Image (cartoon, rainbow, N blue to C red; front, side, top):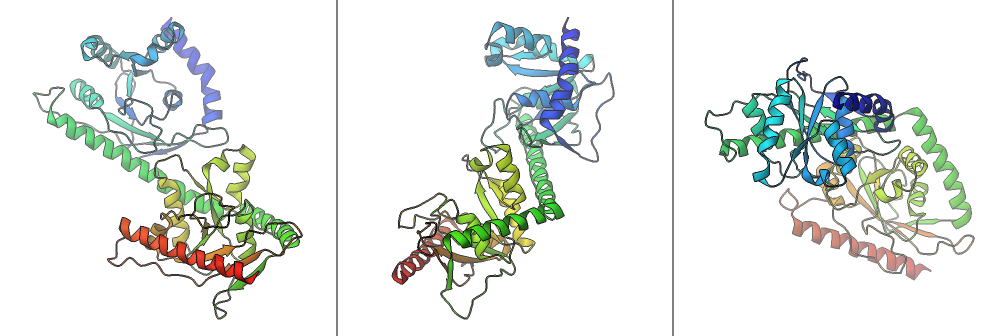
Length: 426
């Protein structure tokens, strides 16, 4: 019965999994899956329940046994039955109740089945790896099995590719007197986590390189230029922007080299307005991840208009950070709103200081631009004031939290001065 259910799940879920996940696979040159009849321990980061579907789709012709916490079994009797049928092995949080699962793992390994463990122990929504538990290292050491590390970026959404990295098998050399509390297990578990972290960084770097190559696609460049021409014409007709400069000797709207354009954020039309102001340059705007999630068409359009997705879910978005660094090092300008949100009132809210790291890492200059608040169709002309580029250099060569706070406040004070200048010119 169990074999029938497992094959039914694979046959009926194989095609939908591939169509929905659309995963792109990156394999280490040394990756080798043990032949049939030989087992291995799979370890993977844990984003959500779709990770199980991903692992099954990665190894469709091998039997995979998942170590599953008792919380999943307590959902319902039907779900309990389903987990047992597809071969999950129950692991209780209470150590005294875990006597049986090691025997099941041993028998599964003897039959050549793959053992999959999520060493984080729970769903991880932070974007950063959690601390690993030592169960995977202990089982692999006791049964003398190789460990195959897997990392998934966890983008299980329609029209979004899931990127997966398969690492080289890791063979452990445990001591003879190995116990569940052995210091060797702690060191090995930390080494496994470091390996998954390295795979995550590699995957992020590959994605940034692909994004840069994708942005050079002729169709995307043509679509960006068409959108820019169309929106610029509408904005010029509706708001008639008047552009002025603080230094008349630096009247250049074509951005050359790595430049970070920072601007106050007063209206949803600010991003296309900046692209209109710097018409001769291909400006890459940072956009909040919530905008990309509005609907698939909006996400598709924004990506083809050179927008960089910024995830503000709470954790540090290393992917967008690397993408911005790669763009600046390639000589492309980026635009952002350091306030982080719309501020339609007459003031300038405190700046976030993350963009300073872009400037320090790449040597890019920061160009302050201030927009007036009169976004009224056929009303008063919209005023745009472009300041002189500012070089960002930390005093000790390395940025500190205090220096970043002081520097962002200095740039904010400069933006306030530009804003006051626009108000006096009305």
